[in-house]
Length: 364
Image (tube, rainbow, N blue to C red):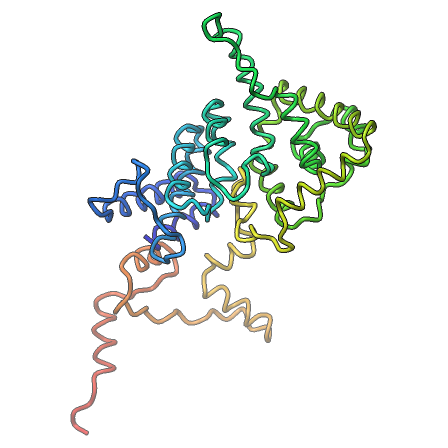
């Protein structure tokens, strides 16, 4: 399993995304074959502690598979994998809670997202997290569009729910620094946004709360594509105007929302530093050219360059490397290494000659 994950990482870095996804698929097959017959995770009655080293590969493989499904446009499948990750360990060790809202929106599971936010058990109310505060407002936009066609006299409209505008206004008051980052990332080029960002409440892009700032970076990196929809941009602009108007009428409101943020994210340290922003990004990582060259470079060429730098004798070709010893080595590692053109494992005659040369002399 570890070898397949390593191969998947390598294929990802060199741009072979299909090969990387295939390696992860093989990992999943191998892990599933190792399941205990009584292990039924799809029924929601099983738990796996991420703290156990034996389980970490399973979580990493599932998280990578979830990203692969999203990259292929299979957002509903990605959502189901995300649900599985959350059910296996509710402590959210790999950050599935910070992308489940994105997959729900892309899969158009708006009602489910609202129900999940109300029923999921967490130390904090989910609406306090930046991803849920904004995603719930977006989900409400599309639910409001569906209500006129699905409602009737027998099923009156639910007035207990906050409107999408109220939810978006609340999100902007709670996490105002998101707006500055969205305008830059999406990007939002209308001149109206320049005027809005000049207001003191939206001017900064940092909240000075380490945990919250990290979650906001993850949210913007993961969800910025959704903000390119015209309906969502219109709602955001209307809510921003209302926030500015409200703050001008009541100057103490900003302090009240600051207290809410400080209470929800009270730690002075980044509690989510183990989550990499890159793991929530759509961009495909690549190794820097120098690192990639060193990874796949012919050792003989590297040796020649070192000789040239050291004394100008780079014109002399380095002697061919000795055949590598295959004893006690992983067959998969040998197979991968054999692909490299400079790999030298010798042949049968070389091995016989090598063994004869190193054979002990019994004559004293």
